[in-house]
Amino acid sequence: MLRRTYLGIDITAGGLYAASMRRAGRSSLLRGARALVPGPGMFAFSPREPNVLDEGRFVEIVQELLNPLAGREERVSLSLPDRVGRVLLTESETDFKTHEEGVEILKWQLKGSLPDEARDVRLDYQVMERAETGLYRIVVSLISRKVLEQYEALLSRAGYGASVVDFHSMNLHSFYRPRLDLGEDFILVGVEGESLSLLFFTGRRLAFCRVKDVASDPSTVFHEVNRSLVGLREGQPAFRRASVFLHCDREGREALQQALQSLFEREVVLLDPRLDRMVAPGTQLPRTQPFALVAAIGAAERMM
Image (cartoon, rainbow, N blue to C red):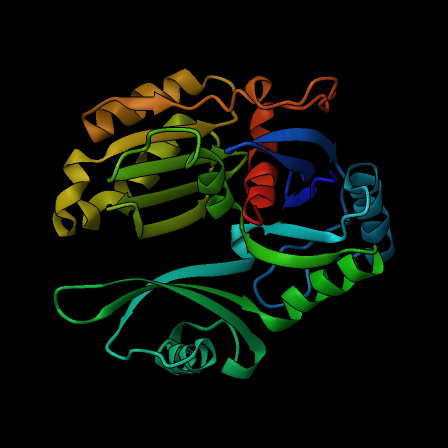
């Protein structure tokens, strides 16, 4: 029996990473992964303008990454840098009759937060719950239409279609969620390259999201996290009981772990992807840190 292959590709400032996954009972197997650093002049990541500067080379890179992994699969889950879009949390008193109606209402409701005119923005959303106040709590993803359409068009030129599109930080969560007992209330801190992401979940629902470019030293990360937590400490009762997890690809991550433990005043669990536990027999992984492949794997599993 032929089993479907699930493809994920993660585009970052440090390189492009691709993963091929297959189901294995209730879990999944990593059937292959590839990495490529395109060098300068390939991207200019922006929330308003098309990101890919060398379109021909980008198409070649996608084919070089995905063709050896794909088999007959043409669908791919695309993970984009957080800086090219935005994730917002909002509330609405309206019970949307259709998904399309929700898109239009949220565009009007969030018009002051859109990167462009409403007609030039691609918006998607998920209703998380109805609060005791009667309002619906909603997580919204925003991206400029011309930014997304360039990526979609170039993937199509390479022979693939973007079935799922999300941001890097969300795909980190997608990777760890089925593999760890994160609990009902938890904080996921991601420190990679010069990017800091901070996700807070209560009742396993996203309650706070912030992504920011930061310098690499633990002191700067400490101050940025502390600045982000000001509102959470007072406004979220679950904050003080939330477990804290750290995904970090930097050398000296233990020093950062200790700094964050003093900030949160509790244990901070340093995450290890342990890709060796999910690699199919005979699979060779690229010579890159396992942390770099996490979002690509998480993206691929979004389609499972």
